[in-house]
Length: 633
Image (tube, rainbow, N blue to C red):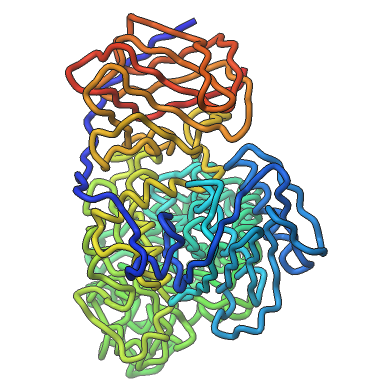
């Protein structure tokens, strides 16, 4: 039966593309990619060979002891991508059609994350480490998403920057554990390895606490959910960096401890600043650091330390505290700097390196300096320059407001600038450093100043393309194409990571290869109808007989199909199945379509391919679908 649901849909604002992406033999792009294939980021080196590899029904993943974990994850992702179970075998010789993951390469240039790719009748990914082999499998997933055949050749690949990733403000806006798990997989798919979770801010404290349950928001992650997320991140070679923001942005915590709020000499109470002159403040903060520090196996703990007091003269208790602890020459600001070093000592005692934001570190306002072992995330020109921070011994991350900040209800990254002219060694305002090796990398930063301005699905759609531009720039290989306009078809071609779950659970079409009779422009490719993104769509030419189909990877039972139409809908259309992509069986038809969302249930279909075959358009435009979703019977 057919159930009708309607919604108001705004036309997505997309950049029209004048050029499709094409690799020409002998061009710079051809040097970094197998012929006519998209990869993000592009391979550093590629030399074409003769012949090709075909992923078929006899494929195996051949591993050694070091690469077996990566091989197991790869096989699971191949199942999600193709619907085909691929056995993982340890040892032995790779046969035609097999993919071999090998460790112990003697090529020192590959480093800890690089790999060598050899494509022929079989494929070998050779790396020095399990991490390098894992990243080789990410490249293969992107290639296999586009075609079961990969042109023969050899390539080498390694990153320019050690830290490449995403920061999410989960304090102001609660992001579900599924959203976070999706992005672990999507980060790894792009060879991004850094996931900074900002768990607390003025609007919430988002992690279960046993030491101080009174501060926890109703919407929060349980420790069990957190453990599952950390385990998944480890499997996908993504480092989780936790942040509980002290000593500012503590509104949610201090709401339960109002006696620890900082009060000015005029009696003004600041709801977000904890009083660093009160010893009880340190007890509370120590409790929380010590509770969460052991939960995260990664090497970092982020203390925040941003946007605390600026008018220190209004808080004489901070000056009194500083002189009592740091000497008669101390300033009120030394109480803040002393706090930073106090927290750093706890973190280092726990075997980790502390990180902080840069804006509180200034020159000439105190007698105490933050310890040089602290990594500084530089986001604004307030305070010391990146070069001055290097001079004090700090390692940096480039967290430049422009172009890495994605602010709900505010500015968004300029992706054209990010892809075409920016690089991770250009800090805010164009500042640079003399030793780029002291800059670990860069990340996209999602700040939820207006948490209700976007849903989490809209955020996911909004950061998809910035993450892909950042992946290219931080991996640092020669770009396959010079312009962002030409880069967008590559984004569509690789899609989301296998297993990226959106919409109702069990969508067999999610992330699967899609094809169409036509596209209105390259800005609206068929792949956008199965990418799980609410803001992207496929759009056809303006004739009645256009079609869209999805390859489910294997023959499946089909009991339900959801079509999420844009304004250009099908008044009459058929849903058809096929086992070979040539002979089609109609399992549903209608001549009364009226747009919105068509939820077609109680189907009795079966096949590897599902097609929407247009009969009559509902408007003067073509056919346009935000999503085509397929579910088992």
